[in-house]
Image (tube, rainbow, N blue to C red; front, side, top):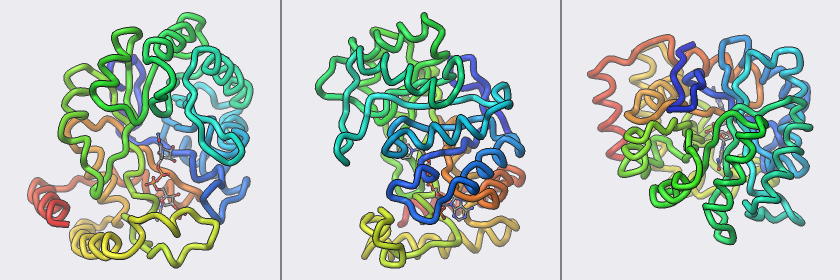
Length: 311
Ligand SMILES: NC(=O)c1ccc[n+]([C@@H]2O[C@H](COP(=O)([O-])OP(=O)(O)OC[C@H]3O[C@@H](n4cnc5c(N)ncnc54)[C@H](OP(=O)(O)O)[C@@H]3O)[C@@H](O)[C@H]2O)c1
């Protein structure tokens, strides 16, 4: 597995991380504890050392609990990332990055994960009700207490990162990025590169849409959130399907699956350090882990760029 320096954090991480949102089973269907634990352990077995979870993955921190169980006895093999600042309240996601809340959430995450320290602690999303100064100082206090080893934010824009980093070191950003969501290329990726902020992008496979298993929203069960997701419906889905069919022929030329081509492309985009990929079953992790085993030629990268830009 390819590994990389993660910005200025001092952490060395695999270029693919395992995303542990799907295993929480909220808005996702077909998950069970046995497969979820096997999926996390499979990731470690193939050299994926970076595991990303969050308090709000699951209504009661279920994803963190599963991660804690799966990594028991293997702590040294894992760069453990989780998030704070968004919680569930009566089925609604509420943003609260106040100082007291962050301290309390961190201590609860440490208990659920059953570890002494979190390697990367990320603010899940900006909280309009709390100043960035208060949030940043709360994270810096956790750093001084040794409860966390690096500080990250997620879903922040450049101005928000600038304000945050006036009050605490900022080691990483977790933004959305995929072949069909490339907005961060404009100013966020160049800013992070210039300031040595590690970038771990989420949803590179667009929740399974950019894989050989591409399916329309209507085909998912009623309780699966992909049924309502606009990327899986109507014109957007049709355009993605066209793009996918053209990409599949390049993948075949190279003996790759579509997911492997997409992940390979993603981690080779300028400014991207890591692609966080969700999975619910070990065989998906195995397939994805081999994405970086083959190279795409400069000519293939250029053809992919044209296909992606013409979607
Ligand atoms: N910071 C944030 O606000 C935020 C938001 C979203 C996600 N994230 C993080 O980023 C991670 C990745 O995003 P994501 O999990 O939403 O989406 P994703 O990585 O784009 O897609 C994951 C889903 O794609 C399917 N899949 C994976 N490998 C596959 C393969 N080889 N072949 C076919 N299908 C495959 C699986 O769906 P099935 O199992 O259903 O087949 C899997 O659950 C999350 O898990 C989470 O850690 C962060």
